[in-house]
Image (tube, rainbow, N blue to C red):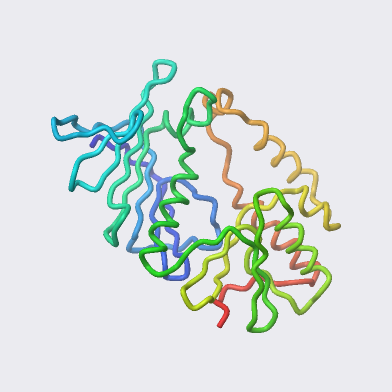
Amino acid sequence: MDAWQSTCEFNYNFHDILKIRSNIDLGTPFFEVDHVEPDLIVKVVNDFEVPMSNNMIRLGKNYWGEYDKNYVYYCAHVLKQSLKLYLRNIDNNERTIVLCNKNYHRYVKLPLVFSLPFAVIVWRVMWVKALYKGFTFQHSACIASGQDGVLILGFSDTGKSRTTFSCLLRNNDLKYLSDDITLLNAKGEAYFIFTKVSAHTFKSVGLPVPLKSKVSILLEDIMFPPISYFIGPLKSSAPKCRGYLRQVEDSRKYQGESDPLS
């Protein structure tokens, strides 16, 4: 495969459970480390080729694979551009590869492209890898009181984050573990996971958001793919994540918790 080598390298270690190496920022600053032996390799490259063979079978529209080869290859053409995605070793404990070309990374959010955004695919592969290790990512918030934790379940946009931060602001003894996705093991122990929080959520519980952060979030929300293709992808939300936690920490209402509940 003709893979473009990025000068950037990001290494992530999720509680020694999942270790990821990527040439793009995955927006999870609290898990970034200097070096890992990865379970999962994530790459965005200029272009690559998967040789077509007589053994290939169609797995779905634009999806291909081979028996006993343990890979999935997606290739589609939109606006005279080739969109390519390659997944290997997903359903086992071997090192998994998630690879796409730049066109897929940029164009896939267009209405004409019936596929999943690259970041969503990476997260779903992480969920599968966690299952093979005896863990799962639960779509829920989690707050801790001493050694006990409470999961707050709900569909998207139903108020999990708002409920979490409202509880934290009203009770100094509660601690934050997650507000959207929680990492759990088979014993029912929960691990800290932080995802991006909207300015609206903080405003709704009475925490002010600086104008600079509001503008940055607004641009990120309205930057649809045709524009972002020409000016390049926006910077990661990692600095805002740090700023949000620091802002709430300064309110002396809660602190981040990085150890599992036991």
